[in-house]
Image (cartoon, rainbow, N blue to C red; front, side, top):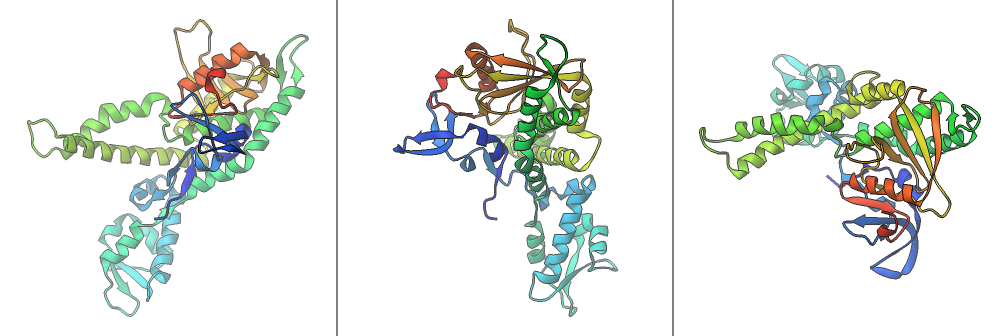
Length: 377
């Protein structure tokens, strides 16, 4: 399978951090890219197309087809691909057979989809076809419905979502004389909040506020390790532990795919819809705008995150979303309505304070418009 780059931080989002950069490999050449920090305080210029991606991150391989029971559009994609493969992918058209059932139409493929391991295959002339060769072809099928959905929502709409939010706050109606809160259109507020949670969920390190890690470490790892253990009453070997963890990780990936599917194709249920609805009814936002010359907000490979700390003097518990070097959205509990947005300006000290929090929540990589990270923290 050729490598397919799938950006878990959208390139259109990183575009806001593009600037004139330089790279240690070509120090005399200037180009328009972003500065990337990977365990370093000195940035390297990099094209936004080359960073913050993983191969086939959102590709649903046929080995994950068990999620089709709760993801009917994924099943429909696979049914269509299997039909095309059987009818046009070989020298002669092929059909399946299960007991007395002939599997030649999309309807029959869908009916017997979860029994595909039991199918036998025949050419239309009645001769038996090689089951292993056809099964290998089917198992190599990939569904890109999640990647396409991300692209349709964020890659195509992000600039309009973020620009509309900033413009609406700037032009919003003050709630009172001398007040910094602004009333903006509800749909504009909903769109930026929705984008935050989509960015949160699309991250490969997404952990559903810690719930997934607890399930994996406390339940799945022990269960799958014991299933891979060859001898009772002995400690599992390192190889058996890794094998068990591999099965658990694959299961968690399938659960993640199901969550992403619910996000795009269902109106209720799952982490995304539950948290968005809770945020819409119980949260408010602050738009921090950097003073001119005061510095710039950074971002990272984890650009949308929840920050919880009980030891800080400042109350910064909430959700952080840097949307450009100049603007940062802070989301926290509130009662005035999601479309009542506080507009505040950030001086150099505030920018560095928020940047330290952003850096704290990175996984590996920081993105900035400045080559020197120490100037921003």
